[in-house]
Length: 500
Image (cartoon, rainbow, N blue to C red; front, side, top):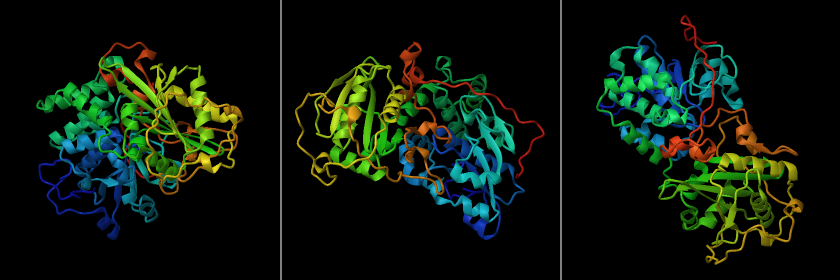
């Protein structure tokens, strides 16, 4: 996206930046003109998406003497965008089509930098991953609401707020009044409301500045939808898996553990386990998912709500390898810190072990250390696999089995099992970057969260539970949301963007 990059209807203020003919960033490159990219983080949640779009719009409208193309870039490949359901929903509501967006796999930032044409503004993060380290020289500004892990050598806006969109709103309202149109205001307000859990103090996310700028946006555009209506719509969209393939559903909220010889996927799934297990062709889909991404096994943790709006947890363990399945099931069944209180359910498939989870406090955040310690302490290593232990992805769907036997109840001791599994290529890695979570280290187990990458925005439904802190019942998100304390770093008034 550059100045008037997209030929969209004039009503779309945020994407129709002036009356000049559309100019692409490719044309700027051909004419050796600067391309100023506003880049969100690799999680590409709603905050990163809207912050990048809104700030690029603001910079384009306030940099009239600049010949640069201002390009908001969503830091994922286009194929991953359907998984960002809340972002897709809000943009669609504001009549911004996907075709107007530029994704990371559609623009070569390294080539632009080598040509001396790239300037970078980072929003919702301030450290580039190792694969993008060469681009650090191009960073001229940072806007982030996380604690600074190191001091960037450029203009920095970092402050304790619930949403990076709050800081972008602050920047925009300091400019000419006509820049804040209803479309931009709706995007910014919706993002802040979702990040701040409907501005509910009990959730611990909202700050006075978030409240201040949401109120300001509402005062300028009083016809914006009610907060509660908007929050519930975004919340519903965030956890909507309608239309997603099994592969997409499993990747929507995925963590990966790795030890020498085994890569284990742990996915949060937002339907009941019964509904998940009834998906047509599920066993073939799971087999293909694991083989495509190099996972030796999968733990699917489902979260849903009963009629009293109370959390209801179930989980399933899948592996083509009986030894992996037995070992993982065994450690989960025996877990005591915390105990999961697992009750075996009837199994539809021979390679899937299903459970009801009685301990609803045991979120995925608490289950991950159990599996991580298991991999580290047992020192699982690769070994030969008996052909009978592995099911081919090409087989037809088996007839459902009527079984209530617990999984992992084998005479074989899981601690002595020789578990096989090979790590394959990840589903997507930005050029030049290797995900540490996918690179097994001898004698160790890695978790995605251990890697020095931009932190993935918390998924409160999965990562935390209201029972942990005894919060009052509010909304589904408010109950589950957690927050972290971050420091405030204010830029000096004299600071201005400049290349390092």
